[in-house]
Length: 315
Ligand code: 8YV
Image (cartoon, rainbow, N blue to C red; front, side):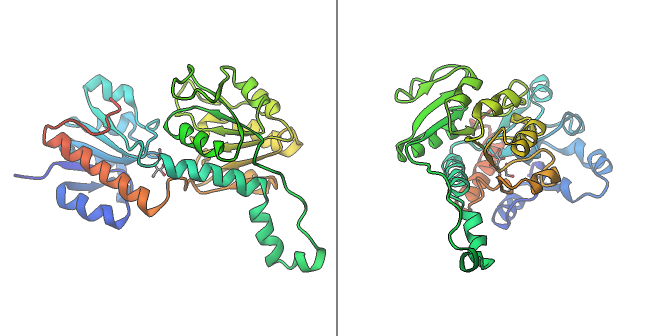
């Protein structure tokens, strides 16, 4: 029996590529020079798409695959998948939640600590001889016991809050409704008020049209010159123009960002802002988590083609 044809939208680590090619007839869309021609040739035979959170599957790609049954996302964010196009044709969609929540939460807290305590600046201070030449690194800012706000108390936001509780921080959160599993943390429906009551504002909300630029100029002003914005969700949740302006004129104290519009080619102005920590969308980037994500992508594909229940369905 021939293996199901699967359109692969982006590269995976070698440990995923081998089993994926053993189990399925893989068509490497991302390697094609003429992607439109490649879709025209291979799209009619494609039964599933294996993609990544930041790559997704557009309506054009979905439309070019008339036999498409499933889109399996390597990542928890499925905002780049056209869910309407999938729903219209009964195409299933899966992602890889839970297996990455711990690492992403660890990294969000890491970025807060690194930026607040000047870890990157301190390393440069030593390497550049400034310690010997100029003395102590300028004083940084405390983390423990201060105020944290979490925008989006989902799987990742919850893991962030659990970690911050260990630092004795006052934790508040904003979401569409209070969470029954968050009795010790304050629900603040208004995002501007959450920012005003926070020293560190974590953006952990799933990206959607409804959350686009949810962190805007008024929110950044509310967070204030002593505040720090940490984003491990999607760049679309933050108005980058407003953020750049706020960082440049002192309206906002600092930021730590793992995601950017147009990544990996971000707005070069970010590279000229001193009070910011820049990271290459690596929050889930550990061997352990990426292996678990790859296994889940393949397990969902296998379950679908075996007629078994999907492990982590989105729709
Ligand atoms: C992954 C992500 O790095 O989970 C997501 O949605 O954006 C990241 O965790 C990415 O999808 C892997 O390419």
